[in-house]
Each structure stands twice: as structure tokens, then as C-alpha cells.
Length: 329
Image (cartoon, rainbow, N blue to C red; front, side, top):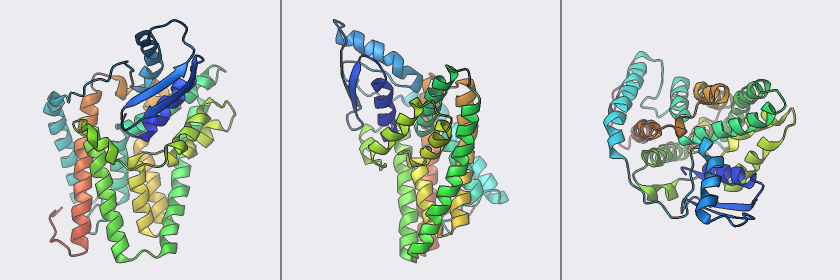
């Protein structure tokens, strides 16, 4: 598991199994405790059966704790791919397409870029899992397409409106120079932690990741089983509050802008950046997180996110004269 959204998803999916009475996942221990009526099945048999429920979302269960062994060979491809992605960002920066300059501000092109990176991370895989679970319920009634459209449209609208509200709140609080600098550094630190976790080489780093309370994610996942017409709309809006570090880092930046329109457009373009991969997850059942190449995807995304984290911290410090400018692009 990569974040508390994974906890909410695994508990929700296992809780829907008729034999399961309760499922309690632990992000710190990467485990789940399941109780229920399983007859005379052996624990290994139960774990195998329940793994089938979680496999579409990229999880498996085993009775014994698995030893974590980092797959260093993934870096052979992840490093050049991430390097190319970063080079593209620098080129777009020089051309003025994205704006992430020495002022520490995040332009709309950059928000779109970060959204694209986030869309191949585990956080977006969790949102994709939500979409697939919801669509399965509606598919039973012969309506697989319309709920997906409602979900994606309402998600974009919600990110625009809620992002604007956060930006307006920043204006109401009249954030000073020191607070704005602190928020910029916090955004960078969150991105660094996210990047380290995506590399999947330091298991202890998962405990450092700040997230919203897990009960929020549980309530959001509970919506997927409702077959009401408004369910896709509510679920799309609710993803704004999922405990996802990428979303939270952009929310903090929106708060620092002190502007309704800047906050709204920043969150909207971030959500727009996640749309292509989420749409593929919705309409083609694509599952990046279930493929053998998932380690390569996550490590590549992790390296790019580490770059963004360092970039944000250094530029924020340089913008306020604490250190001399480091990046000239």
C-alpha cells in the first residue's frame, strides 16, 4: 500500500465479500486483519480467495509477512525515462509553456504536468479502482457509459469550485510572506515524501506521508455501491477529499495563492492532467498497477516527483533571498 487511500480501498473491497464480517487494514504494517465465516478453509486458502477480490486494484494477500526486496533493475529504464520527462519539462519551461520559476509559483501548465505525473502513480490508481468498482455496479443494469461521463465531468467541476474556495480562504487569512514561504516548502517536502514512496526502496518512508484521516476515504468508497443516478456525480466530487498526497500538495499551493480564480484554475488544470489515464482506466479497463511493468511506472514517476519537490523547495528559498538562485531555466 502507498497511502491511506489504499487502506480505504482494500477495507471497502474486502468488506463487500459476503463471508467477511470486518476488515481492518494497517498502512504502517502493510497488513489487513479479516474476520468472518469461512467454514473449514485453511488460512492460505482464504488469503488466495480474497486476493482475487483485490487483484484488479493491484493488491495480493498472504498469510506470512512478505520480505521487502527492492527491484533495483527497474532503475535501468526508469532513470533515462525520468530524465527525458524532466528534460521535456525544462524545454517547456524555457519556451514559457509551463511556469515554475524563481518566484516559486506554479503555473497552469506546470499543474497540468504534475497532474499527468500523478495519474500514473498509486494515488490515481486508487481513484481508477473507485471508478471501476462503481462502473461494475452500473454495468449490471446495462448503463456502463453514462456514469463514467458524469464522474469525470463532476470531478473537473468539483476541483475547479473547491480549488477556488481554498484560494479564497487563503485571501481571507491574509497569508504573509513567511507563511507563503512555509507553504511552498511544505508542498516541496510532501512531493519529496511521495517520490521516495513511489521508488519503493525505503519502506519506512510510508510512515512519513501526511494524509487526511482515513475515515474520509472510507465514506467516499462507500458511495461506489450506491446505484442512484447521482452516485457518479457525488463520487467525482468526493475524490477532491481523498487522502492523496499529490492532490493535497496542490491544495496547499492553491491556499497560498489567496485568489479564487488562481486556486480554481490551478486545481482544474491539475485534475485535467490526470484525466487521460483515468479515462483509459474507465473506458478500457487499463490497469497500470496490475501489470508487470508497474515497478517501472512507479519508479519513473517517483524520480520525476523528487525533481519537482527539490525544484519547489529551492525556488521558494531563492524567491525570498534565503539562497541564491540555483536553476537558471
